[in-house]
Image (spheres, rainbow, N blue to C red):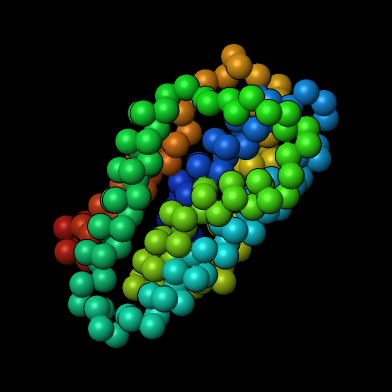
Amino acid sequence: MPIAEIILLAIALAMDAFSVSITQGMLIRKKAFPLALKLSIVFGFFQALMPLVGYLLGIAFASYIQSIDHWIAFILLGFLGIRMIRESLQNDEIQESGHDLDSLDFKTVIVLAVATSIDALAAGVTFAFLKTNILMAVAIIGILTAFLCFIGVYIGYLARSKFKFNMELIGGCILVILGLKILLEHLGMIG
């Protein structure tokens, strides 16, 4: 998988975490830096860890399903993308939890990080089939997620409730397009 596609995939996978970061930033009443740092480190770590786990699972089964790997990548990325699009359309408004996030505890951050990185697990399986350099991929995914989450907290903090932008919809569309591109390339329909 070329680096440009890994970057696009990383951005798409980070959209859930980015959206959550914006939402959390909107609820901060004091300083944004501590929450931005906490979310960016934890979200980036889990977003990098999950594709690695998915990759290892994919490697274990790659020899059995190599002839249909492009279909698996298409189905996984398409499913994840459509799910993200559907969820984004169901939740077009940013939900506020009503609690004071100036004191967001580490356990809650971990739960949010795992919940927003499940999609990356499935994407990691596709890396095994596509013979992707997994270390480069997880580094890009982790760093981009951390960066976007850090920025997301500040966007939410500065914009508060005036900011309503559906990043999950954009991320879902990118996943569907990448899945379709992989399928069409392996079927020889595009170069």
